[in-house]
Length: 414
Image 1 (cartoon, rainbow, N blue to C red):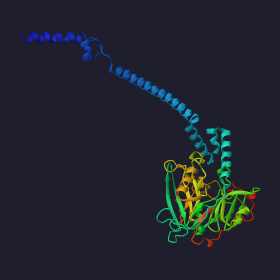
Image 2: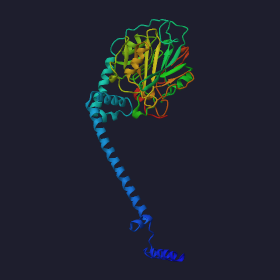
Image 3: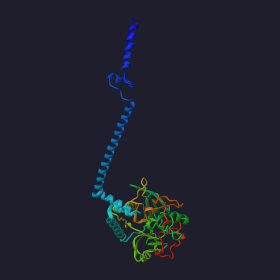
Image 4: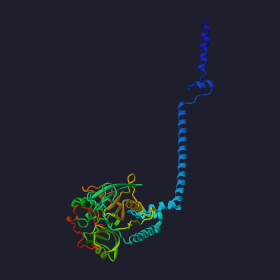
């Protein structure tokens, strides 16, 4: 009785095993359903192919979405950039900023070749007009004038000769150097022929308290040696360089023997009659008789590094240096920005000096305070305004003596 069920069970198992086809490994689900089981390797391959197809489909969908989004965004930007008032303002601001760099020709891709020529001509005309009004300001020493606790003009003998203030605005950072006594400023020029000199070098060799860049220079292919100035260079009342040619006048920035700042268009004899002491040719004048000459930011000649010189009623000279072309630190400022800063600090006259990669402020230790935009560091320049405790004791030899402008190779390397 015990063995009979056992035999029946064993026989049943044998019949079940015999029913399984050769080389088949049924899964429980397959056995239950009566369907043949698929190979695990084939299943994984199929899933892998499906995954790749889904990935390709997703990437392609994403690429198409990106393409159409970019195309739509470009179209919207183009409409705004070329057809709206705000877009046109931005477009010309970009063009003006390029015009102040070595890549001036790039501006034609924004406003066209004709637009570029017209824009440059417009600024030349406008700058000339800004230099015509005669300046009537006078120096009135006032111990209480100025900004800040330590500021002061000629009447405040207890104030330091120089002070430096950091200047910040929308997209720019810079420095304002205040020189209490304008008669302490001398225009210094390079010591060696055929090459300009760094302002830091000028400060170190002359023992100056501070120094800033001054006039511009011929710069062929933006690789000039800094030795051939533009226009006039006057130091200690003497004409060191005259590159005016047949021109009878030029726009200058400087100081007369009484410490009064002069800026605007003048003839050489007129300057000598006014007792000019230190001066270079540059433009535009942006403040005259206490009023700004640039009506809006849009007419501020683009965004760039700036150097500006001004004077308060108390006689103090202001040098403004704005760094630029360095995203994340300082992009630069328009001349309108510079004008508003100078007006806020009491300037009654102010004018633009050479800016761009030439903009530099040096302290009495010969250290560069700001961050010049030139990738090569501090530039070699033809002139600098330096501050001295005793400027009359400083010797400034005329490095251009006996040289004619046409004989100077502005691109010669030494």
